[in-house]
Amino acid sequence: MNYYAIKAIYTFEMARTWRTLLQSIVAPIISTSLYFIVFGSAIGSRIDEIDGIPYGSFIVPGLLMLSLLTQSIANASFGIFFPKFSGTIYEVLSAPVSSREIVLGYVGAATSKSLLVGIIILATAGLFVPLQIAHPLAMLFFLVMTCITFSLLGFIIGIWADNFEKLQLIPSLVVTPLVFLGGSFYSINMLPSFWQSVTLFNPVVYLISGFRWSFYGVADVNVGISIAMTLFFLCLASFIVWRIFKTGYQLRK
Amino acid sequence: MPPVVSISNLNKIYDSGFQALSNINLDINRGEIIALLGPNGAGKTTLISIICGIVNASSGAIIVDGFDTQTEYRKTRGKIGLVPQELTSDAFSTVWNTVTFSRGLFGKEPNPSVIEKILRDLSLWDKKDNMMMTLSGGMKRRVLIAKALSHEPEILFLDEPTAGVDVELRKDMWRVINRLRDSGVTIILTTHYIEEAEEIADRIGIISNGEIILVEEKDILIKQLGKKCITLKLQNKLDAIPEDLNQYELELSQDGRELSYTFNTTTTITPSVNNNDPSSNIATLIDKLSSNNIHFNDIDTKQSSLEEIFVELVANSKTNSNYMSKHQKKTLQEQQ
Image (cartoon, each protein chain N blue to C red):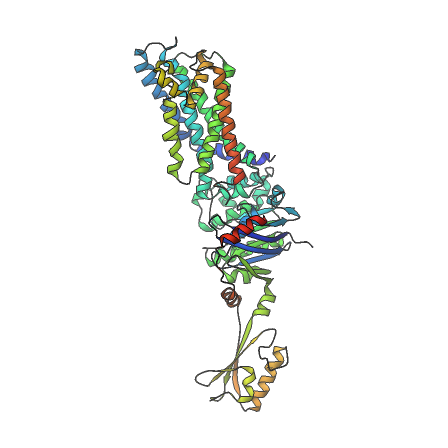
């Protein structure tokens, strides 16, 4: 294992975070705080409790998930896309580095950044609404697994994209709608039964439901299914990344 | 001594069907500077990209210092440094950070003293805290060399290292390359500046249409393929070349004042003269001129340059289409 290479990529990527502190850390915190102020305090104060949880607290796991997903994808996709775009990828490709080490470097850094953002947002949420974490280990599991899985997805998008428009395409047109429609701001039990069934095809539902269970002990779907789906998404993303390196898709001609 | 890089039967066909390299066989000796000359699109960059692991070969094998680039890529890539043609760099990194990053990427433990030495050798020390985006093109080129040297490679690939740099910087770069060779680094450079190859290379390989036309010691190449032209300024105007001088294929200027004799520098080009020593042919020619009462008051000689040799070789090289037929492509894929 080329540990120095993993460290070099990881350090390089994290250095970019500190260089772009406003964009990387401050911006997601401000936007999430605005959600808490608007939905949690202003509108939320007029909404009844959901499953016995005040609305402001109920939306915390969903909002956290929204940030984790978008940040993981953005960080990882830009991390690998930019060297491709600028041409500096030649150095990574010509180095004695395996595909696993490349992924550990880039995805590891993107995961770390997302975790950092997630923890800060969680702390920020505590300033606005009362928080409780019923199952801390499960919360940590969903937090870490989501960051890794969606960083892998971001890495895939970064390799697939050959221009900046494509880089934004999936996060904007696919991921964000899935998060909004996946029960971030409501319980899917509030939907008509037909739409409840349709919603179950949304993979984000399982992540949000499991994550909310870890906070308050209530879930839209069985927590076991949420855990299984989370692991399935991780395996799927890992398999796609493995295939990319195996075939050299968009990397080696 | 075994070659430090050995390339056998290397082919590269892109998905579009374009054959960039065709059956390349090349040995590179340890400690030499070999220049790969060729026109744009000849396949020079593809060749070094395959050796460095950036592009996959369609078929063939590359051995670097006894290790296969496919199966033992960690060992081979660790021995190689690459300076790309394009001035690619992370604009927001400092010189120090980007060179340190490269060393780590190649699996070497941090060693600030090594980085410092490289930066000082390349006159970059006073720029170490500058961001890459603030550097001039020439300085960026030096940083790319520093990055390629950061893991102390034995073999250095320079892809058109002086493309687009001014004359002074180019000569400065040649000094850097010579210093690297003196330190034991094997250097493979691609260029389409003939002057560059003539100035610094030990051997020259000429690539055209994805094929290596020849590889030869520079001096031998110039000697073997070069031509020399002797022009005699005649004392008196000559109306026609005497018949007994026809065997020399002389050329008389229109004003009858200059007589030119062009010959190969190693063998005579005059078939009727049974002698392979050009200098003896010249002596005979001068004797015959004298006996024909043709006298001259000045003599001018011109040796053909590497550029002229290169142009002639490339022009004569095969002009086969680079596009393989579907059948050829299928056959090659079956062989793999």
